[in-house]
Structure formats: C-alpha cells, structure tokens
Amino acid sequence: MWSVTTKELSQKDKQRVGGLKCVKVDAKLKEITGSAFEMEADLVVLALGFLKQDMKEEKGIFLAGDLRLGPSLIVKALADGRGIAGIIDRFVKGE
Image 1 (tube, one colour):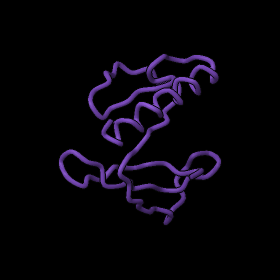
Image 2 (tube, one colour):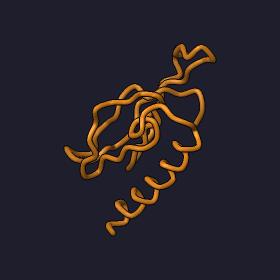
Image 3 (cartoon, one colour):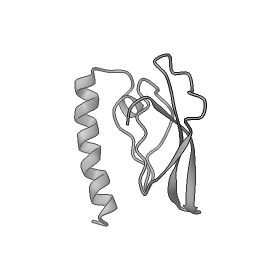
Image 4 (cartoon, helix red, strand yellow):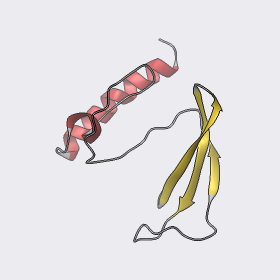
C-alpha cells in the first residue's frame, strides 16, 4: 500500500495486534482530509528506515535493516530483511 501513514495500532487483546488505523498522504506526506481508514491485521512489520534506535529483540519483536544495523547500503538492508522474514515466518508457524 502506497502513500499511507499509520496513525495507531489497535489491539485484539493484551498480547496481540488487531489492526491499523491509517490515513492517506499526498506527495509532501501531508494527511489527506477524510481519507482515514482501518485495516485488520494479525502481524505488523514496520519499515522505518534510517532510524537507529536502542531497541532489543524480544519474543515477537524483530528488527532488521537500518533499525538493527544503522544507516547502510540498501543491499545490506534488503539482505537483512529477507533473513529476518524467514525468522518471522518460522515464529508465526510456531517452529
């Protein structure tokens, strides 16, 4: 989905995400009035880019790319993301 910003995550219960509250944005990333909508979700993957945070991976929390490695080449971020995607897939399947 393009040109959308997430405003809020909703909860299914205390431990699970239920969905996203979003709004469409224009080319300058300004919110478009009246474009708010909600989507159901079981899993949310945030693509933040160039934000190195002091975050730790915990059960159900996965870091990849710039968030895990810091600003770097997109090739490294893509490779890291693909590796983490496999880990997420195994986690979701309960393996």
